[in-house]
Length: 434
Image (cartoon, rainbow, N blue to C red; front, side, top):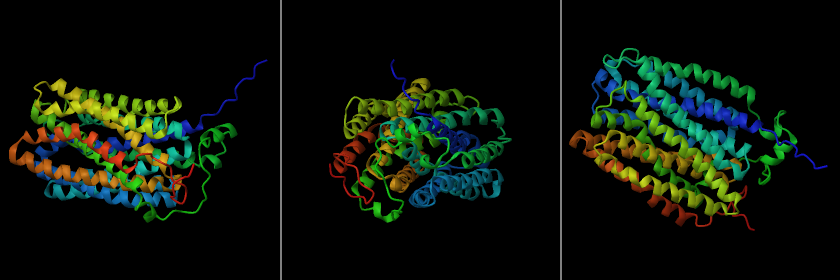
């Protein structure tokens, strides 16, 4: 008689579902203002520079938070650290609804600042969770799955906002900011009931735990000082790769404004373009995570699998450079969608590079440092774009899309120079000798 294989168990996918839920809330929360930007500008009489400054407030806090929250999460642990992050961003997300016209720029800037600080904890906590619950060969795919939820939030935002907010008067603009509070409260309740480390969880079978740890190295419980990862060129390779976050911020916060000013797309009509763009982004995120794992299962080294996938992404993204010169709204939407798909596939792999190289105890810290660099790049992009648009109109979008299309190839070259072999580091951050 042939032996039947013992089921591995699947509790890790419940944890992944929680990451998908948190990412959806995260991106719904941060996308709302981008969708409502043309309407809010009319209500509060903002210039492009005013809007850019509000976006910059978010990214300044995000940069500060990335630099600190990663270390906090590594110290507190995933369960407490993640709860802290989502609690902070939920409170400040709802505080947007309290802003009044007399101090709209300052009020929104303060609310965005708090939101940015809280949301900075999401990806360090999520990636640390993936490192704890999935073997290396599955991490890019798991990351691609939860990262695809960024698009679920971004897709939901225009439809919910368009349904609730009056396009002409802006009536009810506060309600979308309040919705996330209820969603976040439910997440915190479920997370506190659900999460433990795999080795401590009563619902994880012996077989599943063995699978999770199948390619893991045993680590001590001693904490690594946050500053210890700073001198490592591997940290800065990831940070360089995260400069491309500026492109994603551009799509997210300026996409609706570009379509409104270039093609006259209104708040009530923005849902379908966003649906197309972010469904493509979802596909890219899942495919990017799957294909590098597929390469590894075929026997490719981690270094080759990740970098070849990133090269594919960079090439796929190139056509987005032509968005600002096309006269077709739908061609522009599709090209942005392809660029977003390439970016999400790229992100699934660069996030996984951290856990490929660093011990689990350093993952959140390194992810935070890279996220800080990405936020700073976004700040520079916002400032420059706001000024150019106010000075010379839509010409600024030409340069923005040109950079968005070509940046990834340049960054990939820098990453390869910094980590030509992607050799793992042990728990003392020393190169593992084979």
